[in-house]
Image (cartoon, rainbow, N blue to C red; front, side):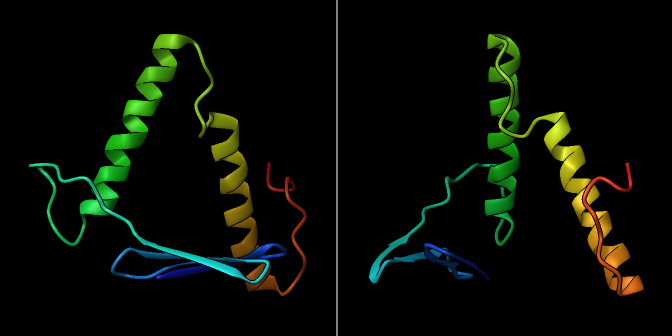
Length: 101
């Protein structure tokens, strides 16, 4: 489903939610369990649970005055990077983050 490679190792999540982390020659593996919600349906239950979790997080942050993990400025920066990637792919030119804003 997704593999992330970095300078410290690799993280792989397969379609059956098997997670493998390899770092500095050591590997750990686990099968992730997606919480069951009566209103969720397969195969979308993981996505539906993530929406539930992020909304709960936002409500907790609003109630406590904390900044959410996914703040407005962070979301706008991600949008800038995403749109810039499309622009770069279309033009063949490098994209400088922040040049669309």
